[in-house]
Image (cartoon, rainbow, N blue to C red; front, top):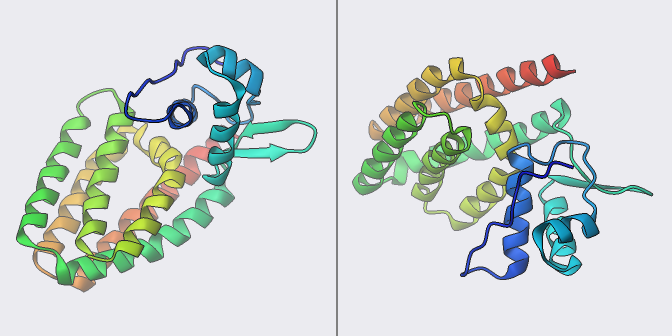
Length: 224
């Protein structure tokens, strides 16, 4: 088991949520690797907590698809598979296109200005070496589009899906050759939202997600 992660204390969160966020980030950053067993006793000792919050965190991670339970083995960090990626992206494609469609009709000038700011912030993260910061900035850009739909239930579903997408997004952003294309696609999505051009916005969104899918599948296949 990798030993280079520590409890990420937050005085505003209950201990169970702190443990959950700590383990979640360790998985997303690769500090807990796919296929690695999550032993409650070991993790509790490592984090300096009782087994109860660790057990609760593992259950939540299982619901997010980051952990699977294997008979006679227990909790294991889920593998990143092509099949899972295709399933997640199929759902994301449909929901994101719906979000863009509604955003084209409902987005305000203030929301467009915020989206421009987030697109610029994402661009700035690409000059650094923190892939996690890039992923967070990318998510914020897309979340601003979701919020512009004015549909709370759609936003909720897409945010739940976001967690399942995070590891795949990290894989994509590790390749610096993809960065310039991502910036271009964000600019195009923003442009067509500003123009209220629903057809073009949907087209660019579809290409944006489709290219990510192809790139990540190639990266996963190369690891096998």
